[in-house]
Image 1 (tube, rainbow over the protein chains, first blue to last red):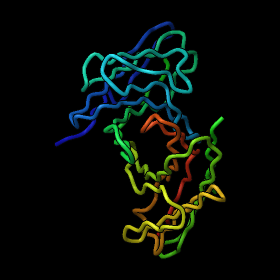
Image 2: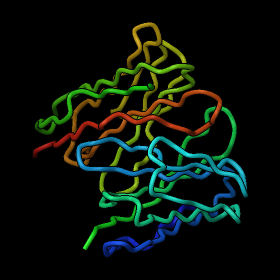
Image 3: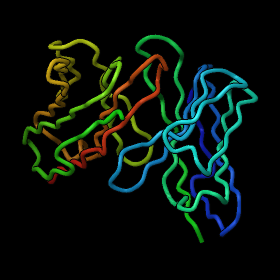
Amino acid sequence: DGGITQSPKYLFRKEGQNVTLSCEQNLNHDAMYWYRQDPGQGLRLIYYSQIVNDFQKGDIAEGYSVSREKKESFPLTVTSAQKNPTAFYLCASSQQGINEKLFFGSGTQLSVL
Amino acid sequence: EDKVVQSPLSLVVHEGDTVTLNCSYEVTNFRSLLWYKQEKKAPTFLFMLTSSGIEKKSGRLSSILDKKELFSILNITATQTGDSAVYLCAVEVGTSYGKLTFGQGTILTVHP
């Protein structure tokens, strides 16, 4: 089955620790995205990548880093510089083109210990 | 700054009721407006709207866009408990396909 797989489903971070959230897709999509969702708020874009080896900052990139070494994979690292990392993180992908919708993974809930 | 605002933020109804969810936007270089349903984790796609006045329909759900007044509505008729979810409105802007600005979401609760 084609889809987007995020892991882990739940993640706990200690103070000062970097953690990495995994996102893998087998839809052969060119573009991938990371969104953050806080309670009572909509999704906010962290980073996006439209092609392998290239990515751009979204609206709230500070304290996060990404890489796009393979088309299928777009991991997100939450660094110690992100002071409020507790949130629900959603990865998405889309095929580049007009009117192509996003497909979402099932998300990772990150909490701070 | 691009802005998408949804209303109401939450809504409680009984099965069989009809609901209307609103989404207004102020963005530069509008490309399309999308509605998603988020039940537990992954948002699932409902509609994409690009042209004014053309209603999109899927079963009991329908949606329409007004590009002059900069808003969209999502209608759900004969609601069922399975319609309980967060409904997200998002606007695609500029030349970066798939780069979406989301509203806060509307939490819909349907009681039996």
